[in-house]
Length: 466
Image (cartoon, rainbow, N blue to C red; front, top):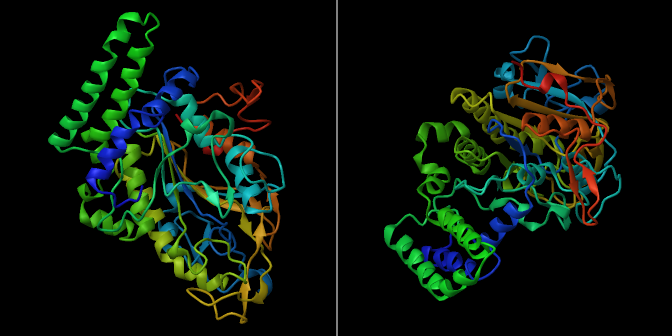
């Protein structure tokens, strides 16, 4: 349903759901299959996903002394962290580098977008692309293990979710089933007419009509209660009630309502899609959502709407320069806001794509003109896929910040210190979420217990300190 759906359409969708396996059925399936976990602090994670892969040399791991065919045109600047340098593209992040830690040494073998994404997000070791996930991504796993049907808000929300790359599905619940997919928000949260469908029918008359329909439906089923010894009917009522809560909950309506924010804070994030996606993510974790993802793609990326800066797609340096202002502003505002609102102990923020970009600059003819791309046939610079080195940043989560983990060689081609892989990445996030990654298994389609992490260890520097 489009983000601009009318109230009538939202109400109709909500009512229809009570006659089929939609929101109530999804909630029922979640509780039926969710694993039992020990009581825990309600920690949360926000993942900012750079779909297509960001150039590490042109952002977090510059190589000013590398040969010209590697280093790129951007100047190197100092950050607030002694000895740490970024490129001039991200001065706002450089100014708050004491609030996050840079990991420069993640590497894997997934050279295509699907394989690279699946390796990082689900731990699939396969180096070959495939149409969809074999294993559930960590977001779905966390959702499965930490589901709580008593909450008014879904526990896993994608604000422009991580789902696909072209015709490939790069994330998903796999054998956990569709009930563990994210509650997905599409559209541009900065648009004046943006709204979240199926949430917040807060007008009393709408809520009363919806409850009236439910009462009418239940009146036809009353005789079944006398015959039902298993409690099934009562359980169905409970799940319908949860769906109704989401449709009518003032709490849900408030969490998704960006107009409640100070206009100056909205401006600080950036009055654009990426900035407001990040602001929405902060609002959601503050409201109790535990897993939030937000993808940076679309028009703010340039002609091909992602970070896949092959020369055939973009003039890589024009593309990076075009999107840098939006990227730098949104990410730095999110990190600062997490700390300013006292969320930094329980909310972990991770900014990454599926891999880095080739250190050696390539030159190929453009396939078409547009934003950050020369006219078709014009030879322009690009950087290709590079899974052998990727830089990412980690903020909040109670970790000690202002650090650098790992290093690459003088040309940014290979990791020379503290190499970590996708399993370590996953273990670190699970550790923050209070999930025992070393022992938890989940049954696959055949009922076989499948570990959520295989031979991975949480990265010590990215674990909360006492």
